[in-house]
Image 1 (cartoon, rainbow, N blue to C red):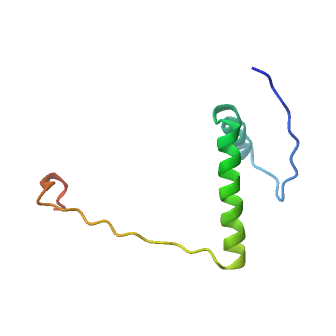
Image 2: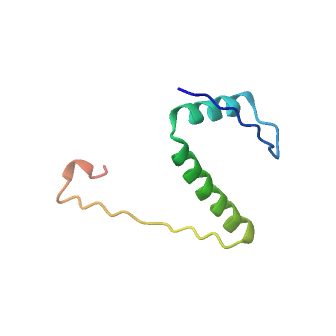
Length: 73
């Protein structure tokens, strides 16, 4: 496997744990998936920064007649 090096300018100093996570992600996750995730995070950040981020809360109803083992006590 070929290895490539990328230099990044960050807005804050990463912790050792954050560096470890970044190395792990870049080692284990395909580059296309990393870029897709970064695009999502960037779009979310822009919306949050602009005050237009919408959060949708979904309620889940469990039908206890069909799944009695899920009934809360």
